[in-house]
Length: 155
Image (cartoon, one colour):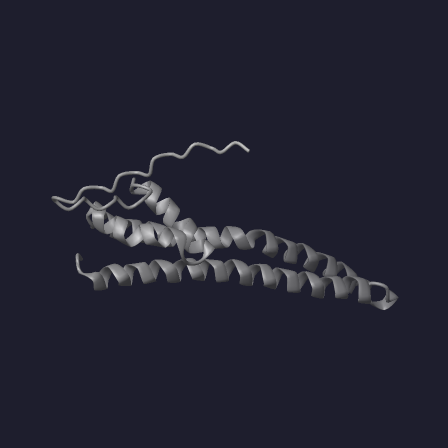
């Protein structure tokens, strides 16, 4: 898997998985908020009508369900990321450390929040360096001398 194609393909899979986790979180939270709004309308709108007092109780239960959806949206996304991260971890273990770094390190600063969170855990789990190693200097090439420090002016 040393060619550029499989590396790029795995990077794209990781990006897509992170984006899906973000969408799952957003959709679950939006669904929860919609349920809460609808439940509040039912509870407060119909609850005041004497013949429909049961609708008010159902609306209050709906508020609780909506709240649970909003709160657990993040947890659902984290569980999805964990499941995908485990699958990626198994695939990455078959690669050399250099290939792992080539796949994961560029993803640390791009993509969605879900992608970055997943990549950070993979980097720590695989014990990769936090940055790409600098290139070795060419033989015969000397580094440029540093500029001498300038004294601060008084005045």
